[in-house]
Length: 297
Image (cartoon, rainbow, N blue to C red; front, side, top):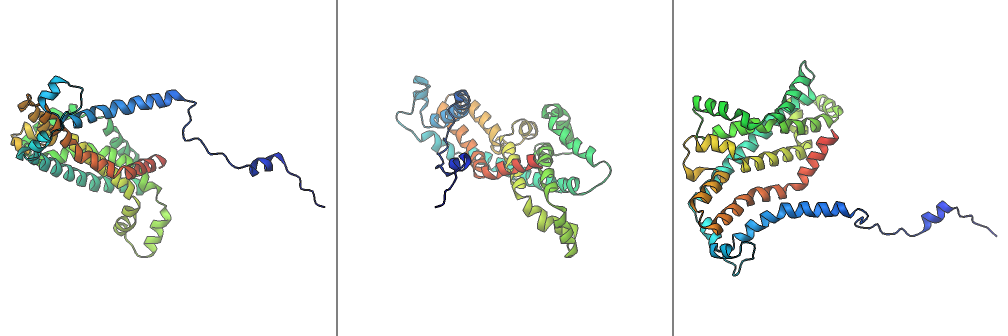
């Protein structure tokens, strides 16, 4: 007859594992603060979207109420406006141009800083990092004078170039850790197989750093889409027709011209934020992965 001795540790291991609680209610203040932050962030956006379905008379009678009845007149009026679609075209053109310039220049500069050893590399990286602390308002006046002198004020290219310049610091800060984390053995193997540095950069580095490229691309596009000061200095002050102003300027101009039609202003505002919001939500997982990789690096 065989006797099996069971130790306390083995007995605990043999017990069925209890389900972990989905939420730890031992810290209710954490969830309370999180709920307050979520409500404070979502409530204004929801109010704008819902307000677009209300008439101006309904809003004046009950500013905090729900549509009664629901009306699509404000949204239809905005969507059939040539001024709105002109602003969408301008914002899309500037946003895509800024994103392309930021990603291309950023990844090339980050590749040199991350993979090459040369005198002044640390200073160059610190210089880009210091660009994060350089406010746009300080450069507003000299930038306007410079663009006017070289004939770029009032043009889209005159807006894209400064936006790319101001987006490069955060782009390089995110991409350098990505490129440094790629093992040097891959580059050695590629060189043995006959790949040049450009071939290694194009065929290996870019695919492996795709999460970081998506992250900086989305950030550059969203920041360009929401930019107000630079378009105001370059486009509005440069004589660009109002029909081709970017959406933030278009919202301001539309709200001034149609200040009596509150429903139309809310509809214009809600439609102007949808493309950037959809673009951000579509790439949300890539953005989180890109930022996580940058922190690990």
